[in-house]
Length: 314
Length: 245
Image (tube, rainbow over the protein chains, first blue to last red):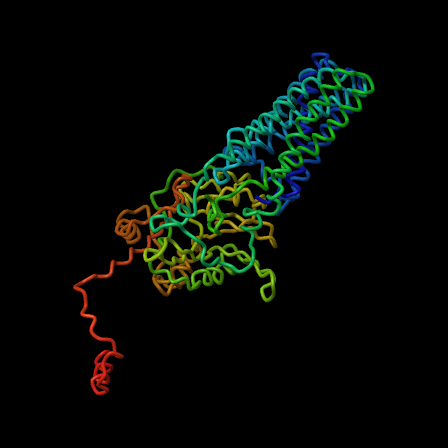
């Protein structure tokens, strides 16, 4: 699948934004993050900015962005519609949460924070399900895809929260959470890759054409001499040669190393904690961009079978 | 509404005979010709007279080789929307632009409300949907909905453009929901196939498999006779040549 930059940026940015919102809503009532107005406004402000930028970026992928509002109507059947509704609905408690923190209104901060956290989790789950619900792409139609979106969002959000909290000298709780999530993300992503690498194809050229009863099927002539939309969008092949390297970048530099850095931040505390946490958040961002790029570039669509994609399969 | 309607009794679709299709591209050409001024018009053509030519087509004819040796054969394979009974391209649509008609099962796009998110193209296993980059909306085969019910054209022409133009009579149009229709009988008689049934989209269109080549009748072994060069008499050699024609 074609890794469109607008979608990669959208899912990484909004994932981190919702993750940050989720942990802020959850940890603040427990007293595990700084309680000052300044910290609250900065943190929730960044979360809102990331999610809004992400949503704006996602509309860049649309052919008719001015009609984007129409995407809110088909929640009965469409995960994309559900994602849009949840994203917009979450802005209400998140915006109130922001105002409550700015005005130091504790009675309002608690329920709005918790509601925003719930909305963030549901929105990211919907994002994951958009991909996981497609039966045409075996690397997406996988039980670890939607949990992965949730986990990577939670991880990057926690890492970001730890970075921000480190400037207030109170990064303990978010750093501990992020370190654990980073380790889990590393394991989950490795397990996912092992599973998709070993998985059988959804279909073959023989079943796609119905000609298997004659024997192996080979392309003799393509239907068009030059490329087309289907090939560009769904038979993306560029860069798969670097997949192994990018997988290492995503899992080691994106998940394992930041988890270790956050652990170091926990152990050292003080100014060092800030340095480690900043480095961790930067690495998570790079790693997740690589992870999301691979999510598309490595995904194979059944339409490519008609153009001979299955021809050289073992 | 992108939730699917209750299954319709009427299931309009195509039956494509892979045995007789000669790969002439007439169906693809007439499809383009009709639809570039039809229901989903116009269909873009970029760089039509230079390198990098490409555009939106609802019907594309592939050519494959299947099998090896004497059993192997060339098969021309037109690919278009199969008007599935459970089309995920419809249910994933966030706007309701993509829909399946309750009355005859045709899958259509309302280009007036499509936002061009292209999720339906991802959801279609068969590559039936192509993005119109000029209008920013998705387009697809309409089963020539603007022909088959069109009372302004003679009745015999009220079939999809691809069907009307096929010189090999390899394309058939009809109601696959009616077991007594000509197309249903053809499917029953020839063992019409679903494409990628394992994906569960339940396509309505059927493909008739290429017939197996009849085994050559072995018969009694022929008397080989002498080679022309072995006949020394020139007259007899001439007679042998004439009679061998």
